[in-house]
Image 1 (spheres, rainbow, N blue to C red):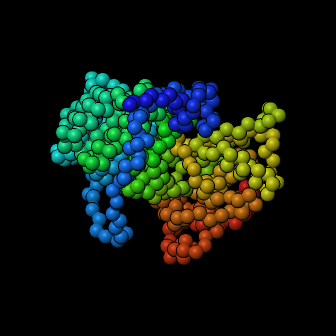
Image 2: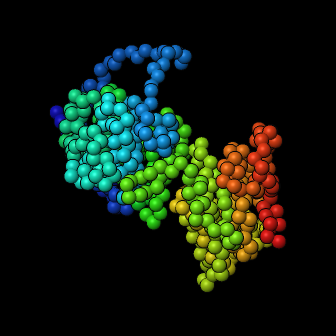
Image 3: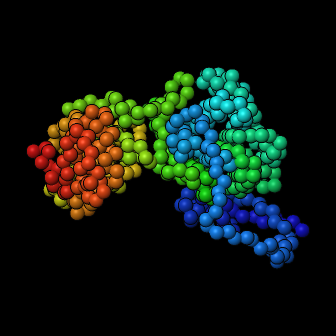
Length: 459
């Protein structure tokens, strides 16, 4: 006997309730709870008593199946995924609307099919008609690529088709448009997204093809739908960038087959997304020297050293509560840095507005940027510029101490390659100190143990 159960499910986080309410207690969002009907078997209680078979355990050490990764022909994609695509892996790609997700995946699909004819690539669009995808392919110059294109949203039909195909790569654009007729809810709901993703992932693991799932994002920038979707896949990639900038950042936040926080840098052009081999030089291309409030930060994104310009503007405030505006960095961390400078260096920001910007549209999450932010803020307040050929990095503690950071030599090597001759760094200890003594990058390093010594550079 089939029973229908009514539940109220939050479309943002997947939390379920027995009755409707305006605000979700789990994620705090308003008007995201929707009624859903789930079908259950009336004999499920009897079936659960059926005995299962005994599973076999094996030792941790043993022979393993080796996978040869698929090279996409796009070096930045291969870098982010850990050296190429692993057969049978599932990759979830999220990003803001219009950021270039479909463009990038169409380029990946075309690149794989051109590299080797045995790579059968299937691009299934649930958002666009076939003619719309063909228009994009003509604009990108990919119309002659042997890509199998379809427009479909019924997962049952998609699974039946792929069962009979010899697919190597399958792209679903997007998972929020797919639906299963067994689930009585609209496409894009939590139940539909979970069920459709489960069927497609199960097929990809059994058939051994690479599955790309495009996911919509919420206004907070997170992938829409149940959080379990990110747990089900092998890799989660976020496509970042500002509409006003032509740079795009592909960031890996989860990867079972490679390093996390690895990034790939692309430039949006008329012919699509073009990979950037030297992003540090690109981010610093429009930098103007001898200007107060500008500081170059030597950071690490994944395994890649990256140099970016941090800009600060400190101006007198006309309001009782000064303004703090941040683009590309954590606003709470800026407030902490300003508090440390006021308490430990006797500086006063209570009558000044502070604006901070990471040039180029890059978002930085690394605490090693603390010292560069402090230098930029002090430079803007004192109206004294820093040397144009200097890089800065280091973490600042609440007592004003400057803490050491990882991969110091890799940061200095990248700075030397781009022509920088001096660096302000935290004290180096342990292995980094030994390596620093064995390597000569022709760059003068000034170790600073406390933020009070920063004032000496502007006296």
